[in-house]
Length: 117
Image (cartoon, rainbow, N blue to C red; front, side, top):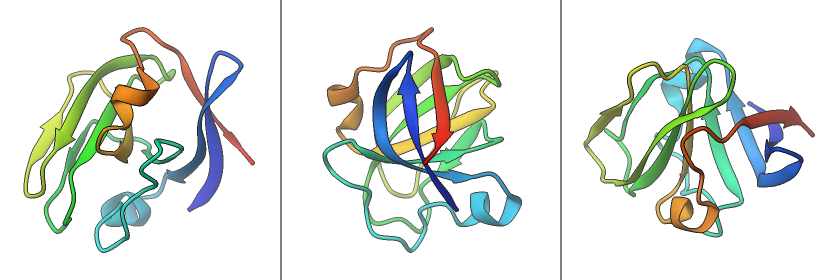
């Protein structure tokens, strides 16, 4: 996975954002990995991806759904293990530590851009 940062306008929103942009990386995702940073400054961007599952995970996650251009379509908070979630029209999915959405406050229509570090 490549490391980058996720920006809202010109402000850094998620300082450590891993990009999973191949089938293998998306399939593995966070399964079997330690939880992301609890301060909301670490995330996993799955691209392309319009739905997620938490089968095989031991902790809940927050999810931000984006369209192909990076505009926020919706958010889901505290998705528990062994669950599924999807968003119509989503082409990218940002996974975060549960509780991060409350801190970061992404809103529908916000434009988020991943940039390599």
